[in-house]
Length: 302
Image (cartoon, rainbow, N blue to C red; front, side):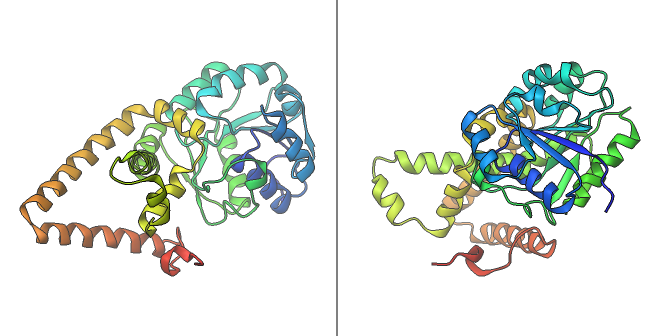
């Protein structure tokens, strides 16, 4: 398979960055992969694991000669990292990222790197784990990767980034950045906020000890703890960067939660059953789309 890029530099070598590197080595072995992480321990781990051809000691060295740079950093650091690498970028280098909020990132990259083609990307994949050791080459296989290029972005650059993610096994969609942020506020950001809230509330209940929360955790609560184990810095930045869409969806959620609270209070079983029936259909549609495993109890091995 011919490669759309010859040298990909990855800035940020945690779960997503290391998985991109591993996928590139597996799917496009002719592509040179260089990397850098702001955490020296992560750089050392990446060198030991060997998923990059070279791991550099600074970001500028990592991007030198690359025709694609992928920023896999907390979205709040995007502008600062872009400013650091700007002098070292090749003139025709394409810039992308892997963050889960896009409007702020697109604006920040355009301001910091006005002479480069920018094709923001969001691979909708991940686990609750983080760090170079947590990545794997098949993370993106069969998952969606959403590209959010601004108007006027060269079509060739978009096509090349599309081809790269397709080669890594992803299903690619192109979407307006603002619409992406609204959709992901519903499907990703709000669920994480709810999970952090539920787990935090359970840990602070005076009537229930922390040991009881852990000992008697049911499957639903364990699912929330898995989500709430995600990288705190990354999610802090996501909520702040996408605050408008998150707050809009949070208000809608609060309205629906209030309606369900009222139904429980007045004993309206019909409303509850109708609501739960409609939501069960969503779960079945997700499985039919191939976006989750149909194994009972989420494939847990007790």
